[in-house]
Image (tube, rainbow, N blue to C red; front, side, top):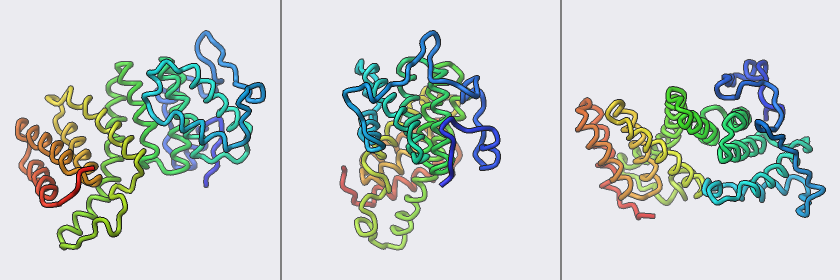
Length: 297
């Protein structure tokens, strides 16, 4: 496993490891930063003065699991979230054997915290580090890295930096398309060869656990809403996301939702008079779905 500095990617690191450098737009204006927000110093939480008294890295799993759902940020619990995350930050900084994946998860949650506080500069800093550590752990094109890109895109969208947001939304979509298409092709070939592999080789056809499937749905439907708001200008981007959702729900064995998104993609392609090949591809998807007897989950 590659070793990454807890302070984030240096210019030399990103060049020698083949990891793309994050621009100032993504990482914030300063290359060396403390954990503070404008006008207010954010004191490091001291766990040894806390009644929780976390012991070692075992604390991190229970801490991070509390922030797995985005809904938490809308419940007026930012102060509590901040306290727990600074406990986690303290534990990570004190540890000498935290994995890159753990660093990534810490920075992603801190990024979400600062998004909730509308401190976008700090959020960008942490999400840039999330992407760096996730890239070290999993690769730059992995679905586990894509969450950092997605949250950065949301920040740029809110800041009306639409070109940057569009680039990142496209990257996230491409990552999920590549991942799901690999699984889809296996099942598609099995269907063509009339081999009943469903339920025999795959406990879960997506290769994802339940939480990852829920995250995929949240990310892709969020991007779809944004794409649909400009569908008249870039219909193919909307259709691209719709087709990814078709594959996702097909692999989740939810044929009714797969058909719903497939029909939306086909209707848009016909309305916009896109090329015949595009429409044919969507029809092939719908045909495959309709001939599979998938139970709805």
